[in-house]
Length: 265
Figure 1 (cartoon, one colour):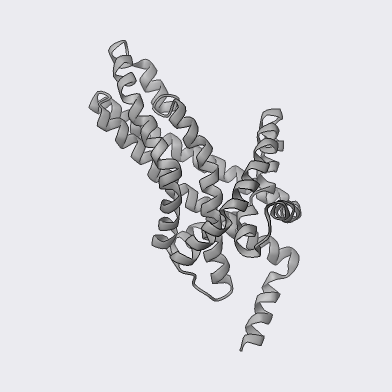
Figure 2 (cartoon, rainbow, N blue to C red; figure 1 turned 90 degrees about the vertical axis):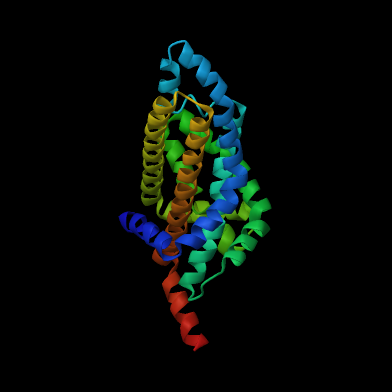
């Protein structure tokens, strides 16, 4: 698991601009718009709360219950895992190409995302109930469910399977390396929590300095979006590398690649 985490950052550094562009193309329309609207719509309410004491505003910013509230925030929360799945397809297209000795273009990755979006939406919808039920019943079953779906986007990107076959394939691969994938899921949750906390602390400072002006909330929303773009790309890289790792360890994928190179030459 540690090696995958380290390699994820290496993947981002290798083609940083291309990967960030893929993440931006997906995250901006799906997540950024409702996020910015949620922060902007909270500006007026924040000013009223500050006039009455301000503690609710500062508490809300620090713990993520203030600026990102309301219907727009709920929409952003729903769109975030969808964006994660789609960016996962794009990044897995790049990683899969690199493994095979190719360097897929930005257009190729985006084209794969577009073609596989309907199947990705079905996979996402099918995974919502078991993930939510698992998390609410007990945290560990929820983490296991998330881990079993972790490589679904790389499967969609590289194997061109239908949505239900993708789910079965993801579960089959996930069971072979379940606990390392659970560990990777926990690492992703912790990293997301850390980034959220740091952004909220920055937001608290901005709100205090600006007196909760409208521009401060919009800036805070922009910081949240940028953090989400980076985090989405990194988690997608981890998922793509986890897919390759499982297949190398359990299916001899490295031997297939070596054979392909020999016969190609």
